[in-house]
Length: 94
Image (tube, rainbow, N blue to C red):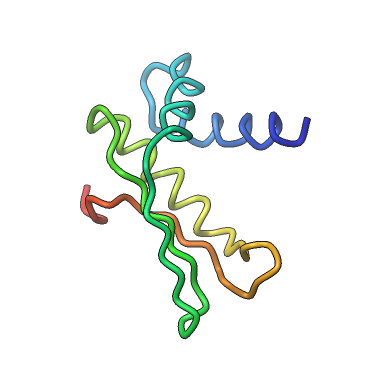
């Protein structure tokens, strides 16, 4: 139930940048199956999650928005002092 609620919240976030709101859950399924790079930086106390680009620019824009929103939470990776940072491999430009 907790995972469903978290996904529902993420759906609401990505819908803010999508024209076809019904595709939000499909977009998240694509995100869940995409490759990521995980880069811990103990000196900076960060754990960067770099997601690879999705199928199109529109999806990448929605994903970038989700990353921005998640980064604002300043969430620590459980059991550590590492702050999670989400970004796209392709960089921060839009």
